[in-house]
Length: 51
Image (tube, rainbow, N blue to C red):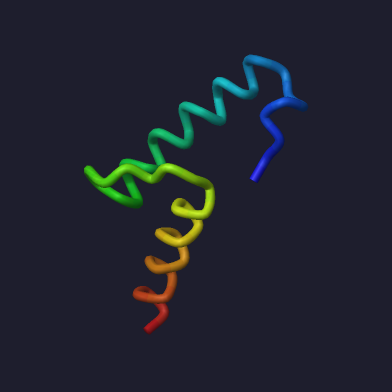
């Protein structure tokens, strides 16, 4: 949930690297294509843990 066009290139690359790590942690082999996919996976884990 950040604006890629408004940040310095090193920060953008850091966000992209973090997205890859989080995609692997949240979805395993499944590809998370959008921010919405990432948030849905994160909230599903939260609901599962809170239940």
